[in-house]
Amino acid sequence: MKFMKIVRPFDIIIVIFLILLSFVPVVIFILNQDFQEGDSVIAVITQDGEVIREITLTGHEGNEQFIIEGKGNQYNLMEIDGERIRIKEDNSPDQVGVKMGWKDKPGETIVCLPHRLLVELVSEKPSDDDMIISH
Image (cartoon, rainbow, N blue to C red; front, side, top):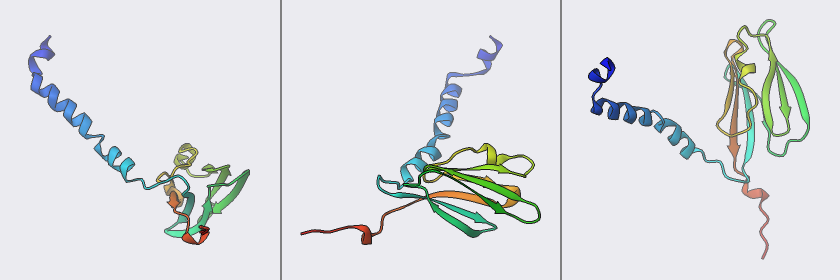
């Protein structure tokens, strides 16, 4: 009961407003996603700011694994299964990249900071060259 004497009704309104306001960035991010059906999802893998590999996930079939080596004995074992990607294994101390799990949607990222590795999933609209126009 002592708590209710301290909190006023207007305080509760302010707290609820601030909680709702905290979701605004998420809504803006979702609305800004420019992914349309038919767009390709591409995994762009960079290390130290340099693009190492780009992999088209849309339409990818099967399972593929490859190693990205860093400085010294650093490594990241990447796995692609169907249209999703993850860091399956690495030798970083906290395993943050491994714990991030599978990613398959544009805008998602996987980060392994000790190895300076970044995997970004981006969408790419099909080029106009792929369109067939008939009369």
